[in-house]
Length: 253
Image: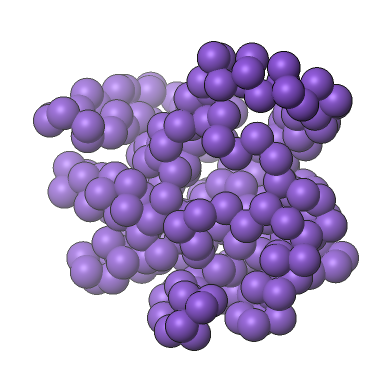
């Protein structure tokens, strides 16, 4: 059984809708996550939306590994580009997940399982997906400005940035379960990321904050609508790729 750990319900929604024989495992305790198990193209999988940030991702992954017999766990979802030529809707097949304090220059690195990475490359090449092979950087706060994204890319060598990869990697490593990260680009390196405070840690939009924000930044509604379209395109491409990948992982197990 494969475990797929997303951050947001919106990232998980297309695959959740495709699950055959879907079952919902209710939380065992307060603040624990729901899990959705079933078959995707004949492959047994479990999906969960961990929430935003490495701590939530680590807790959700530990809960997943405690409740199910998982043979490999994947951190999947949106990422932001840190270099030119990495476009919205394109995939990032991750070699290493990096955690780095950009002020104190304290690095940590979590390698992805090479067989899973190699299989992902094969699936991308054989099925015409645009994918980048490289490292991603996990941060605890969004990198919003283009100049800061570029600097992070230069300092770390990472292709993209996310907020959950290290949490999933740490939990998988502790349990000695094969791990990899697979991301899809939401915002490109030259795009300023706005409105991050309008969504809480569980991915829920705060309508009151959104109304106030747009009251003072009315033109940003154009940006937010464009971001929503980008999210739809990225989510669709990620789901399409994962539908093929999980079958290949099962076949090669």
